[in-house]
Figure: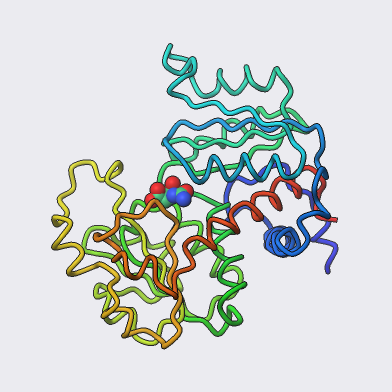
Length: 311
Ligand code: NCD
């Protein structure tokens, strides 16, 4: 490993601003956490993690909480709906208030793009921020857990054709996932979206873009389906669920177009019968619950790396 690996990141804000060697360290550490979880029990004993969530979340919030508990941290959960946000407090004031109580890690999910950047500027030394999803911009731990899952179950990354399909335009999962897959050298990245929901030029750079899911699937080794981000559509018209499923849903018939062992992923929450058929989501090629399981190991690896560095 090069000297670069020794850099200890203060925060995990996004994939793009994190050195590739740090990302690789986190990916490898997540594998070790899965293989030898007892080695890491209590490795962060007594430290304090705050989950500060301004958007609904089940798996991500619980995943951070379980990851922290498995490492021996104590956890405080704050849902904005129950907090002083209701009384008009800004994110910055809420953050400064929490910071005065000296947590070690603050995990933030927020509906605004770039919401964590100003917090990082005022964060005290020793306080580590983790982005659990900001607007449509970034979701770095989802990208990491997806790659951990892919490397565990599919062949070497540089030989894989990976399709990401659905509402790419509003998807922070796509933005972070594409950045990580490109950084780590995916064989071929294919992006497929209905008209109006395509990824922007930065995400699409270096990828093959399709407007037909049937065409995108030919020969694919992995397909990740994404739901329509209804909360971010802002009045944009989309087909009704049945029509959407007919044209853009991953069905068993469509999956037959891909490589014989093509694996299926979805970050959740799923809309069954819309972007994915139940028989595919629950079928033998589905890695959806493996993603959830790896989410805990990956977040353990991220928290451990922020608290102990990459050495
Ligand atoms: C994603 C998110 O919140 O960005 N979900 C998740 O974190 N597992 C995807 C989504 O909401 O569709």
